[in-house]
Length: 192
Image 1: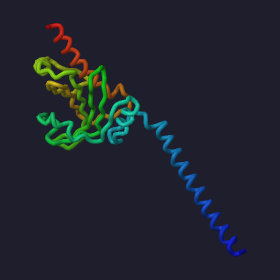
Image 2: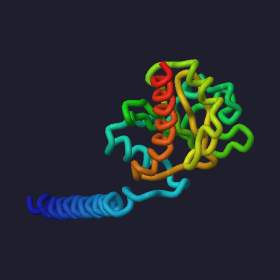
Image 3: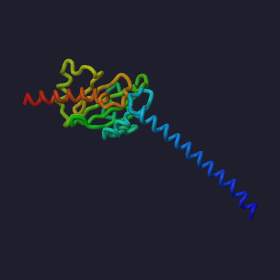
Image 4: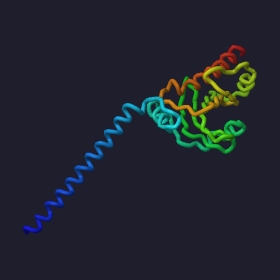
């Protein structure tokens, strides 16, 4: 009996020590993750950082996030900036001023570089909107870059990837596009 207890003690001691080290290691890892989330995750981030900013915005603002949407750009296939059969990446959907919007990245067909685009959808499709929007000189101003229109939506096609965890920064283009839609609605109501 003496030999059995002598062997059991070192084994129990080794298992206890290993469990203690694993617990400490896990604690350090969780602490580091907490420090990162507290001090770094809620700041504007560089384009090379990934899509954590949009995931965070979706969580905070009650918007929706999708890694890849293969069908979003199908209706915009006639837009040369998007190219054909291209998916949208890092898709952020939400509602602003009662209008649905979507922010996403796409690959430029000529260079393959990522850029960001913003789409705001009209409450109801209107061919009059396309006619009105294409006759405006100029249709847009800063912060918009290149505006495209169709009967159900208006889009701003950015020059580069946009990354920020600040809703104001992400919504800047959405607000500008919304203003164009509201201007059209106001003029259409005044002329009726």
